[in-house]
Length: 300
Ligand SMILES: [Zn+2]
Image 1 (cartoon, helix red, strand yellow):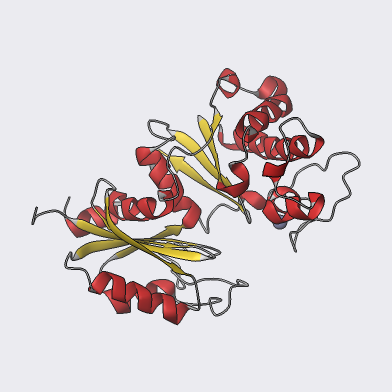
Image 2 (cartoon, protein in one colour; image 1 turned 180 degrees about the horizontal axis):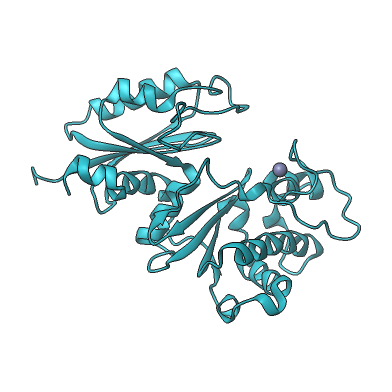
């Protein structure tokens, strides 16, 4: 197996970072998880992981929390923008990895990496236009077009789309910028602030569950009206609450009314991710394999 092409992957998350070495099919040979600390420590961990392995990697895929500049033409490509994570604001992530590891590297968002994994190996296979929506500490999304991420100026910020507040909903938004965006109304911290408990403490059809499903259904309705996807994957910690995908789909269909294509009413149109926790790092590996730049780099 000396001719196996090995690809590195890094999933840089808000609380943990995963390093992996895999192949071009997305099979992971070895991985390691470390807590996300200040940048210097995380980069040192990455260098140790990849350099202490006998398998030389040909390319590196990175799925990073945002906001991060993913436009390769931008002068600050690979830099983190303003973030509340200590030490990361303005950090030149891709520059540091290039200096420390020294292989061609591709950058997507963490949500984008998970979406790539679902597109190649999971719930968005054989879908021309699909959306991966993650609802957890925040709400993020990625758009898949024919197996690839739709190119973007920055990256989609679907969580900050404005929604119509439900009558009598006077709860404070947890988004510091918007009073009525999806993230501020029903991401994990917003649910905790509203109800004093996470969503999995509430049964489907309870008032609390219905409120969350209604807002997420409204968000999905907006995405259907804008992008006309063939499937929406609902992931993340909140997204995993039993029964939520079905309740969100039903709310979405109600909001769409006559503008909802028949496919949006079929079972599984809004569905959970097919891959487990490794989706992010598998996607990081696969994005380096799948990009045209990396195909040239690793000659596949
Ligand atoms: Zn917002």
